[in-house]
Image 1 (cartoon, rainbow, N blue to C red):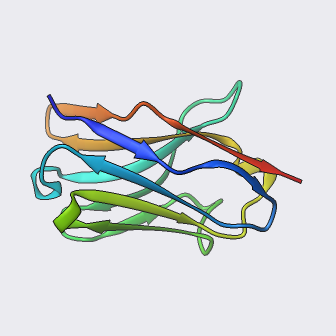
Image 2: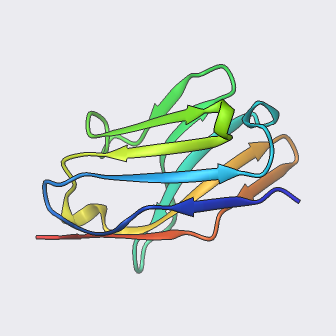
Length: 115
C-alpha cells in the first residue's frame, strides 16, 4: 500500500511563505502524476498543482505565479512552495499520487493564513 506523508503548513501571515512536503513510500517514477489538492471548510476539494512523470506542471489559476510544485526523486518527495500567501489559501492541503486504476492520498495538513 502506497503511503504519502505530508509535512509543513501551519499558521502563516498573509504575504508570507510556506513549503509543504510529501514523502512517498515508493519511487515517484511509479506514478503518472503527483499533485497537491486543498479543501477549505464548506468547499469541494480542488486541484492546486500537479506534476506528471515527464515533468509537466499544471496549476490552478488562483495560485499561478505564487505556488511552485517540485520533486526530488532521490528522496521520493514532492514539494509545494507557497509564496505571497493570502487568507483565501487557508485550507487542508492533501498530497495525491495517481496511477491508472489507483489514486492515493495523504492525511492532509492544515495551512492557515492570517490577515
